[in-house]
Image 1 (cartoon, each protein chain N blue to C red):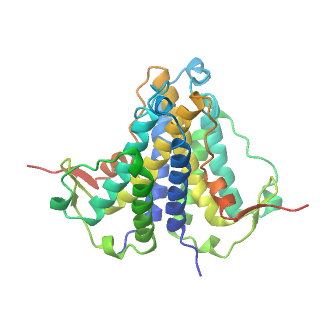
Image 2 (cartoon, chains in turn purple, brown):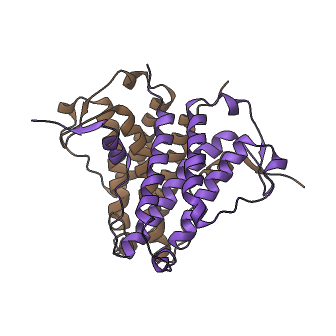
Image 3 (cartoon, chains in turn blue, green):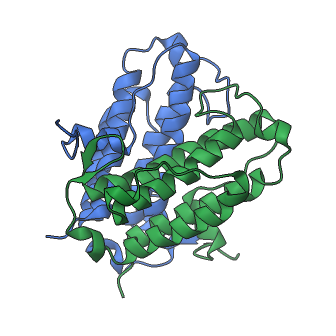
Length: 166
Length: 166
């Protein structure tokens, strides 16, 4: 059976989101709200909330009619974990079977753009990687070693990358 | 015809690489070699060379036998644009038609790992985004506005994100 590389990319996105959330789980409020020392969306807290809210927003664009998503996604920090999980699973299902979005075109966004569905799938992956990288930078600035969560590590995590035994 | 979402992800990766390279090629040596003030791979020069050399390396891992890729990929800044284009086009071709790698398994890497092909497809995208984000952070620290390279901007650049006319 041929590999579903798109599915793997979205699986990776979900795994990486869990890794970054785990890394931030035990941060203090001071650490979560520390001013970033590098170019980021905002503090760790703000960036995490933005990451989760945006992913949910992208999913809504793909799955809901305009009139049902005309208000912005607003989340509390406490809602981030569940939101990331739920939207991530839904997006993975789309990646594994995009038939539900294949016929869509000119999706209307809340800020008055028309967008094709593929743009959203690209944006989900790119947006997640960018903001997780920013959070990792902020963790480093706090003296916290960020998780190693690149493709190689995901491959190792699922057993598809292993050291050659000698 | 159904959209090939994997292709779109690799197209965006190629476009984003060229956007970053174009900006970096306008920098002075001092800017290219400035010590980073945030967590990055290294200077802009080092990170850019690493990004593009790695992409070539991932491609070689997928398409060449181990004996033909034992030496590391070495690039100069002058070679970066062409190398990014060549490897990027090759990855795009794989995204369009993965038949040449679908049957592969247990690829041996130069550093002694066995890896499945999908891991490399995930790593190319994640690695590119992470290092481009680091370069963008360093550009910002130099007072240079980095190019937007996310999915939305790629969509706009291809005319598939368009403002609704009022």
